[in-house]
Amino acid sequence: MRLLFLLSVLMLGACVEREAPTGREDFATFCAACHGASGRGDGPAAAGLDRKPADLTGLSARNGGVFPGTAVMAKIWGYTGVSPGDRDGGSPMPEFGPLLQGELVPYDGGDGISTPTPVRLVQIAEYLKTLQE
Image 1 (tube, rainbow, N blue to C red):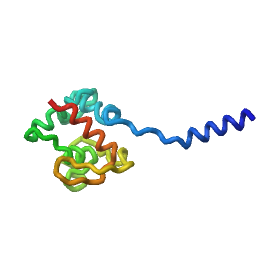
Image 2 (image 1 turned 120 degrees about the horizontal axis):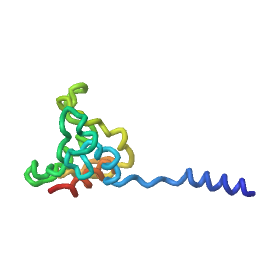
Image 3 (image 1 turned 120 degrees about the vertical axis):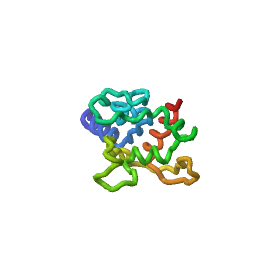
Image 4 (image 1 turned 90 degrees about the vertical axis):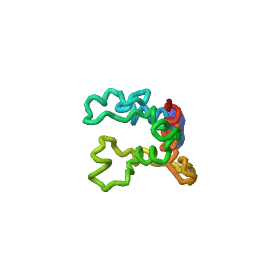
């Protein structure tokens, strides 16, 4: 009887969906090593890179005061509009698209077009908005 109870608890636990990480959590996991916890490009891995990681706190300032949501998500996802092998002129930024796949939500990145976008990608972009100075 006890064994049956334990097996049913284990099976139930395997069926429960895990809650998706927040944008802050995904940033800490995927971005902070290079961009730093505050997003200034001063993470512990930054010293070992040929190019200093971008200071993410000034994205809006460098875009006329508007957060460039679509461009930010394209960069995180790994799409930069250049041919493979010539990714952004040799940027050390890895492609995170495969790691962020999952549920899609409609998102307007500021260009007036609502596009189905992975929720985790949206959450990272929304978190980056909170880092803007």
